[in-house]
Image 1 (tube, rainbow, N blue to C red):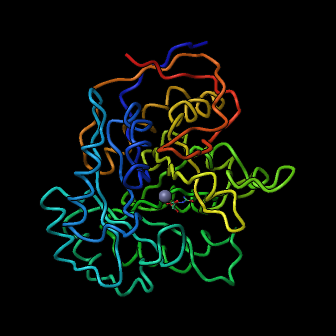
Image 2: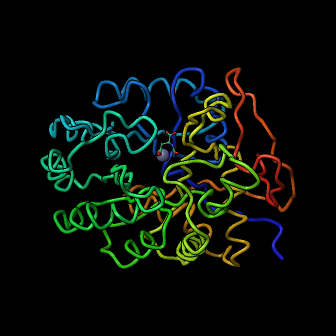
Length: 346
Ligand code: NCD
Ligand code: ZN
């Protein structure tokens, strides 16, 4: 039995850092594990152009603790009025690594998102021409569609057509939660990939209702039935280069979660790499862990692999019930549970 895992330093291909004090407090949790992270632009107000993104990146870089090596990879928040030339300029200048498509009102911080995909076709044409990846929150927003079906219906109504209309556009189907999404990506063209969160590998929808309502298990897309979780595990550990790590760590204070209308989002950053390691071990796939965590992502994005390494030791430890973050309380993913691996910090 292996007691030590050493892998190339991983990256997080989907992360919410927020802004201000919250950002400064949550950033170290990510920077201690990950060399780079794709930073989501759904802050308030959203980062929708090059200028705002440069300023946001500066605030993040200023917050990286002394001695930690971390590079934020920035994304452009697409709206109905995004200027294709601004996107292309931001990409050429190394400001935007990718652009994020939120269907309007699909999730937290998506009110300024896209109301009609055809409105952004000129932006997508440009992105395809310059090989800039499109990251998609893949859920329909039609309130008549059952919340557990919104990802599958998005594939049928929107994503299938998008993949056909833009055969050379790199698309990341973010935080997939269903068998349907896993199969769509697995059988799709090489230009299509997906991120998978720790929570969707660990929990199914029962976790949200175990003995009462569990707001800290609520995120979007919402966790689905067990059969979907099992298929996500299969594809994550399959060795396919189309699937890679993206935590979707999305901190909200206890007050914002434990409310009559609680926010969607799970704070997975603190023990993210340990959480994924547990999955790969349970699936007898530790030999494929490095590919998922550290290689498939950069290869898809066309970025260099990290040369540094990290080491995890087999060591059971209990995750804090609550963390103090920026003077607020936040419940981390796995709160109160034991995790079998621990990152060793040199
Ligand atoms: C995210 C957030 O809080 O910003 N919430 C979530 O449930 N995942 C937004 C998102 O990625 O959907
Ligand atoms: Zn997210």
